[in-house]
Length: 419
Ligand code: NAD
Image (cartoon, rainbow, N blue to C red; front, side, top):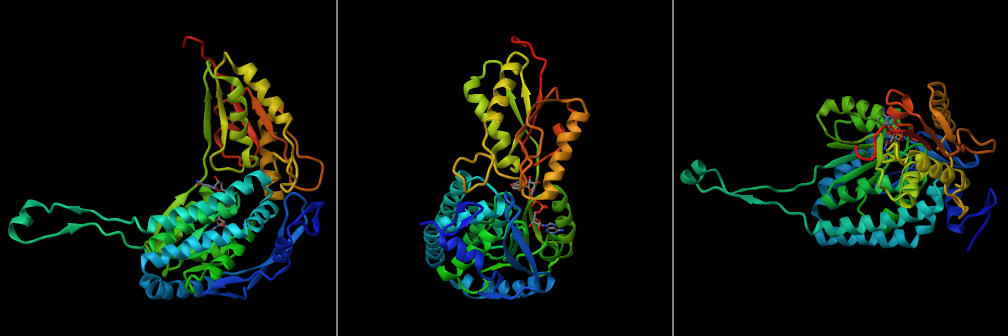
């Protein structure tokens, strides 16, 4: 059932209750007071949704102590069957609260409802998948080198062991999904975790924290320290008590994390930004290629690390392709993610909108030809029209750099049909 409307859109009672509650940090199995506070706004309206407490170095320190205690204690002593059961229990609880998780990602991130619904379902599947993987963690035995075998009895084998305490830092573009992609395999491997959501989108991860407690995970297995990147994130990357940091976000931050991690030579995993090409050959079925190419760029309003935004169109099909893409872009409905008609939501923030608009204006100045969009909508929220440029050259910034917005660069190509 729907409850109070938010900007004209109904929000479930559970979501209303969550937004009205106090949002602290999850450390050592309890919600604890943070040292700061941030407002969380809806990027589709600019309205404040709620306020969340934040932590820095001191809170990360407490979380590391709790995670180490859980790693050395209950978590490592649990049988694989017990850990598997806990993860399946978490998946069932997430299923029961799927509307809450979905609506929080819509409100906090701005993503359209059809995407948020899919990502929530996918997150539940990932938890179940990795719960199943716990039972299949295997090593191998290998034949010992001959000179050892002739002199002594020897057994050589590989043993997969948990790394230990893992710091996980995630971005804002798919908040719950990027968190679960890190959390689920780490828990399956037997690690304990300090998870930091993006300060832009902490809500679904904080709701997940309560579900972890309700599932019965031992205290300290999952800790959530919401906070600014330069404070909580930097403290995680540098902390000597953290054995591994797993990061998803921008390339610039990835570099900072690598330097900060040098102190204790912790293991580092990085999933960073990029610029993905799409090639359209002359024999492509354009009725399929046009929506496919359009959504490669405009899916998640282009705030997608896999976005295919650099289009190489063969000269033979260029004009028809571009006309189809422009028609597709022109027909996209921009709006609030809670509106089922919405195909594209807002940019995450004012600052990010300014960055995207900078690329759009820069492309015009560098001689690219605008064929669709090109403007910020004159309404509340951070809405940028789906934008297409053609006559793009490889030296242009919009061709070379990750924009993380709904901006497509088409290279008109020069190939001949038989080339
Ligand atoms: P970002 O690098 O600004 O922030 C990501 C996270 O790092 C946030 O939690 C932030 O608080 C934290 N952070 C910021 N400064 C930090 C510091 N000095 N030390 C430690 N942590 C710090 O990235 P973003 O703007 O949130 O996300 C967009 C970027 O993420 C894009 O470049 C996108 O391509 C990338 N991304 C990559 C993937 C992938 O799988 N490769 C997936 C999603 C997003």
